[in-house]
Image (tube, rainbow over all chains, first blue to last red; front, side):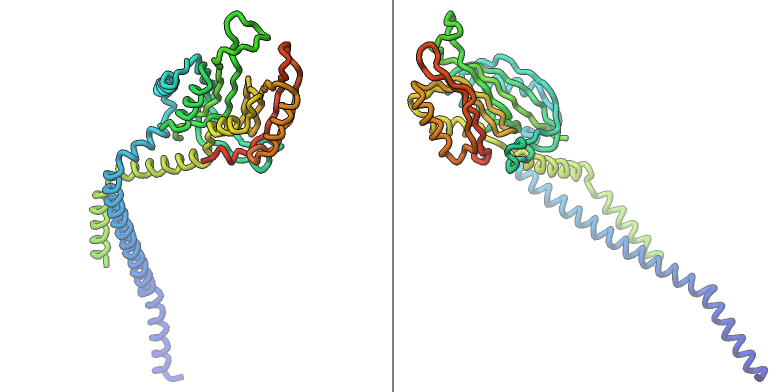
Length: 197
Length: 132
């Protein structure tokens, strides 16, 4: 091997070392910078989309504000017991019933529809979020009660009636075995009233 | 490239500042409210339809004096008064033949002092007809 060849080989090896020591890290940082620029570009596009969507939603919200407000009335953020009492009383008096008692018994997550004997109906009744469970006792005529029940079903505040029971009230002085009903019933309702998580 | 990155960062900061986070949070809340309301409405029962059914199926010589319902279990207990045993039997047949009623049973039956037949009917209903 001539001296010239040795110098060429050394130069080549030296060049390779230089490439690995200096050029490769530089290339890597350029690549990383490119990725960052690309990422920023994506973030800008996403933010622009959010801004456009927010503006669009805001426009729609202004047009449907009344409807949107009903949602917070249907599912308030808290139990709002005082408003509930007013609603129950107003509904009772509007239908000619006497609101005797309202018992706030428990707050539960959910109830299950269907017992072991009716597997096909085993579904959740009501949504999986908090509800206030209460017992309402009203008295009055059967027709008045039907109106009251329909009123509860159509009430803007979301509620479900889980149980109903009634028994006929006998006239004063006609104890026990009398079969002359006064036409006045006492109704017990189990109602779940929902609110948001 | 460093300058380009700096420009993009400035642009992003400017756009981020334009965002109304409170309004966005309101929209998220509204969306959650709508989803929750859908869940409420999905399984809503309309118990008034039960009374429509009872009025439709009750024979003229039968009177109901008490009712106890348990919608989660799809069960109801009816206290009925009939003029005689035959009428009570006919009433039971009417209930049995209706598709809204899954099962009917008689737990108590007897004459009262006036000669009318008092009974307690245990009924299992198909909840589907109580849905919208």
